[in-house]
Every structure is written in structure tokens, then in C-alpha cells.
Length: 344
Ligand code: AMP
Ligand code: MG
Image (cartoon, rainbow, N blue to C red; front, side, top):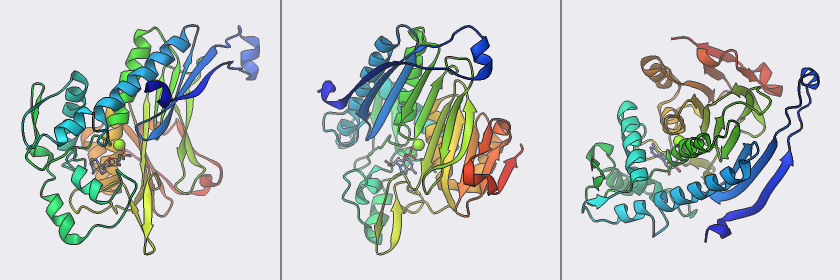
């Protein structure tokens, strides 16, 4: 089962460092070990540097598949599927699901419900879970929205009780949590340099093997790169309307839903990238701040802090927070775009 989901790409190659000053320094070439896999609806790539990297990368892939088996909304054997079909009965959860749900509920609360883990009935009505996408009727959405309220989720210890008819979707935070778990596993295994590419989520362990920061691109909505960030030991998580969408009668509908309306969030933003220590926070906030829009996102940052962001708006304007002023730069054609730096 797992082998099927592991893509047959277990590369092992030498990373060649080649800057001028490095030529004078002792050789720092480190072996790179890469595993690619299909999980959580996306292609993931784990690259671990150093002598025992292959074993650690394989363990990381196993951990990702283990989490996918727990957290999938559509896999009938998953813990989330079981909870969503519990008919209102209390359900015992595993440690991972408890920890993730607990962190997610905290973010639902702090974002005033812009992130809402009970959004699943609405997401399903739009067809984003199956790929059979359609615009639901207004009455249908209004009915489904009555089931959406994270405050009705009762998590006591490891026991979860959902109101009858309510269903949860951890899709907005699962990859972030997975990044945190994999980064911790690699650090425990003694890894000092690794790059986790989990779809739109990037998580970095340490710096590059040569000691310089990782360079992570921020995608432009129409393709290509809008900017580049230099980071070490950070999660860089993007939510964008362009990541998953469909078109009907000339209108574009994307997968990030405003829980206040049941419709795709139209906040004037085309993407939100969060730079944070923890992937789960970055993932939850990238989705939530996309729903909020630029103004509320700025207020949220000023009130809560502890992370940075790159917002791209529909006019192509870019807004960043002060903490990444020196580590972010616009790229290529985007160097002409307006760049605003927010201060506390
Ligand atoms: P992300 O790509 O991290 O922004 O997460 C988007 C996914 O989270 C969607 O595919 C849905 O499954 C789910 N989702 C959409 N809107 C919301 C929301 N407002 N709160 C929580 N989950 C959401
Ligand atoms: Mg997210």
C-alpha cells in the first residue's frame, strides 16, 4: 500500500557548491538524499543532507503516509472519516489528531472563524473533495452553513464530540502539522540540513549544507516567481486561489471558502504566504488571512505578531511585514511591482 504511494525516485546525488568564496573554504559538498511521494493530494519531496540522510528521508516519508491515513477526509479508513460519520457520538482520537485539532481550534478562535475546521460540508458541496466541482444553490449553502461553527466542536482530552451533521476538514492545516512532525523527526535523527516541499508548504530544517540560507520562491499567481525569500529553520506556506479552482459560466471559483458566506473568499488577495517557526501556524494563517483580506490581515499581524507574511493583491501589489524586509526581494518582472512594508 505504502509502496504504491512512494514514487520511484529515491535519488542520491552530490550537491555541488560553487560560489567563489566557497572554493577557498574547505569542501562542504554534502550528499543529498531525496524521496518523492504522493500524499495529501499533492506531490511531496523530502531532501535530507548528510551521511544518514536516506534512512531519515525514508522515515519522514513513512511518517507522512501515517498522517495522511489519519487525516484524510475522503479515505473511509481514516480517523477523520470515522469522526465525520460518528452521528454525534463521542469518538476517541489518536495523539496526532488531538494535537492537530487542538492547535487548529486555537487558530479558528484567534482568527475569529476565518479559519473554521467545520467547513467540510460546504467544501464538499462545491465538489473540491471529489473533483466534481459545481456551484451549489444558495439555499443549499445556507442550510449547510448552519453546520459550520468551530465553537461547537467539543474536544475533551482525547475525546471529540461533534454535533450531529457537523463534519471537520483539517485540509487547511494538515500539511503544516505534517511539516512540523517531519522536521522534528529529522532533528531527532541528528539531521542539520533538510528541505521539505509539501505542495504549497515549504519547511526548512537548518540552513543549506554550505551554511547559507535556503532561497524559497513565492509563486506569482499567473505562474513564475513573484519574489524570493531567504530563510533558515522556517515554514513558508502559501494559500492562493490559483492552487485549486474551477470555472463555470465564465466565473472562477477557488477552494478557499469564506465561512461567513459559504462562497470562495473574495478578499482582494490572490495569495498569502506566511513565514513562521511552526508549519501548522503558517498553514492555518495562510488560509485564514486569505479569507480576511489585506486590511484585516495587517491588523491580525499587529495584534498577534510572531510571524511574517507576503500578500499579493489582485492589482499585483505586494505587501510584506517588517521582519522579512531584508530577506525578501521581488523577482524578475515583478521588480516593477509596488512593494509595501508594514511596520508594527
Ligand atoms: P489551504 O490550501 O491550506 O489554504 O487550505 C485549503 C483547504 O482547506 C481547502 O481545500 C478546504 O479543504 C479547506 N478550507 C477551505 N476554506 C477553509 C476555511 N475557511 N477554514 C478551514 N478550512 C478551509
Ligand atoms: Mg492552509
